[in-house]
Length: 358
Image 1 (spheres, one colour):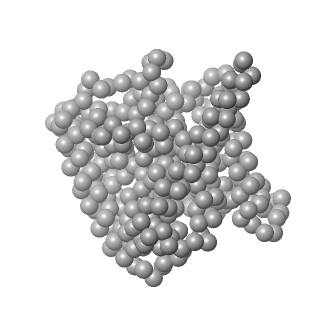
Image 2: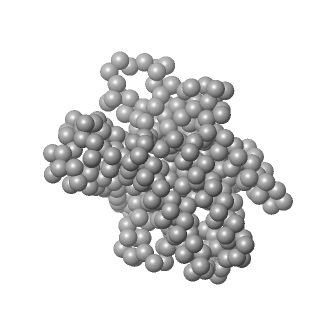
Image 3: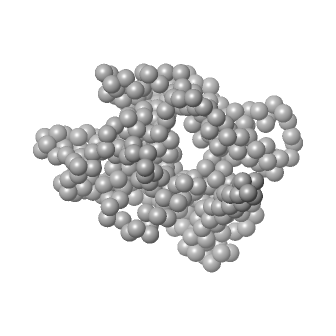
């Protein structure tokens, strides 16, 4: 089924490319604002959608744990989970956009990613497991297995290391499109399972081959110029039409096959990215501000929400008002509590710095 979904996406994407090429329709290509005067927020909004989607994927597992026999509810939480499968690729893509090899390259990554990940991994291992083992912890730590979502950190760190070693290859203007094409082929072949027999089983969940296209695309977007002047209503209509087809087919696939889609399909996240990007201007300001805020706090949500969902496994989600209210309440807790913690820490830092400055 995953193969059919992957090939379907490639066919639809090919149709989009041919349509835009034949009719010479300009496309609003995502590109960052490189001005130092104003912080780029559009990619934070995308990260906000992605982070919310990651939580939705894990909520499905939570509901399935308690009510596997409630087929109607589980099919719908599965649908929401499958709709959110663009999240990890978009998160990797947006993480690559502002990468630059400069002095102190690793300092921010150690401070804002590796150190928090280490602390939460130790705490999570201590809470979740009973028989402690140094070797088991090291295995879980390096492969992101303390909590299932933690695989994202060693995956992302591999990309940071890869960029640090060969950034000149990724940013070389003369053959950047060949690099992008090669990464797309590698990503697609990996999605179809051709590398599974050659990679260690432990490594498969954090294999960069599963997401290499999104990382390369993010780097190229980060080095491109803002193309807002090329904005076209025709591109919006065409992308919306193809997205609607993809959306309907995803619903049919999800309900027909009742299986979890993979996190790393190549086409679906790209459709989502372009669809959201080309409709940001039409979105309600309150909605974009909300997802912008979530995007800014995404690391806190990513590292803290596995603890929340872990403890919630002792409480039936239906006790929060049935399946619908239970779902919404679970989503609110898993996004809201980490944001509250983030705000508390940031205010604490501000007060600490203010006292020392005075």
